Amino acid sequence: MKIKNGFLLRKVGEQNIVVAVGEESRDFNGIIRLNDTGKFLWEKLQNDISENSLVSAMLLEYDIDEATAKNDTEDFIAALKEANLLE
Image 1 (cartoon, rainbow, N blue to C red):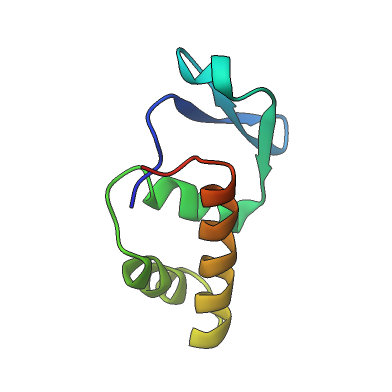
Image 2: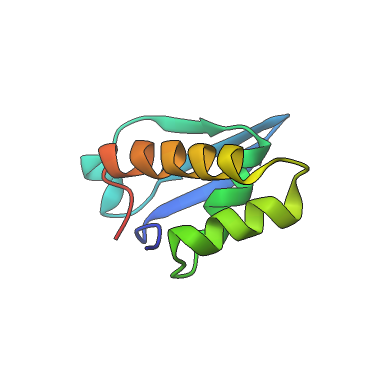
């Protein structure tokens, strides 16, 4: 899975903000604010990556257990799917 083209992550002040650009801005109005973990996962999703690989990356980056990494990753992916942001 991968983030659709047409969405950019930017740092605005202390906030991680995702905005739609180009054709995507016609269908997606608004912005998405991400915490640092969301930013980490978003950046990983710039390239095609499996959910299992995302969980593994979370385990390497953060001091969390596998169940937490899996739940957080699943929740993030579900939110992206609901917003139709994944290819």
